[in-house]
Length: 368
Image (cartoon, rainbow, N blue to C red; front, side, top):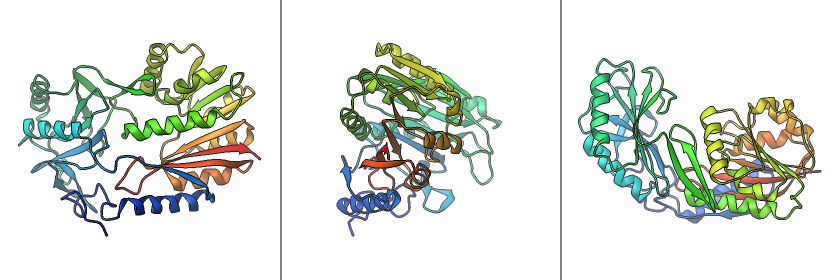
């Protein structure tokens, strides 16, 4: 047993591994991944154990801002500092706590109140505060004015009001208003620049995400790719495709979330990439795309894994290599069991989320 660094450990539902020594955490995660993929030769990459997250969603409650109590949906632990969040994010947390002290918070049991969440994002060199408001609350106008007043003194580059329904537990929405700055954030990976939507997904651990990209580049360098095509499936804002475009004759980004597609267009232009096609397509319609050859695939699906129709199409293909980037060993195991025409060539574990049971993995598959 290890003494947790966080004073809220045990009551806060955010972390569950802080009483486990870090080396043991890595061993436990390695064991989980080995069992999931039935493969033992796995490289392990790790970084900072604490103060790494650049996104946190804090709930407004009677005492300020916090996270849910472990196992109790309607109760909250008041958080003054989060030890897995970056120093910049913690500084922003203190600012938001002070400026929004005593606001009419959303009561999750009775389902009324205006202020639901404060979503803080602090990628290196940028920052945003998104205040999620109950759009059905009778005091909404006053809440909006409160956020606009805060925006005038906020240290965040971007301040957004996000309107959410009272009957859904969400902190993001396509119904939002930019009060200060933009609705996108910027972040650099390796030598490339990226924009991503404030309301969208992006990795919360900058250093480990960059390690993932370096690893994938190194693995791809083992192949002859200059005359080949790359599919970046579930391509998001284009990170994998853009970072590897120089290795390939042509790259196709495949994504159906419209804000991510628009951000990808900006990123392609800003990084002066000329050999990428940005394709707006749901992954389940992969069968509708002509398949070039030779082909490489990088696939980075959500936690729910690859859509069954996309999985079926992938099982029929014979690319030179398929790189499966996964944050969910359970769904990874299921999807690999369906890709019976492939075998594992390499595997790596990236401890993207220390002090929690979560992890990232990259599995390199080749046809048998």
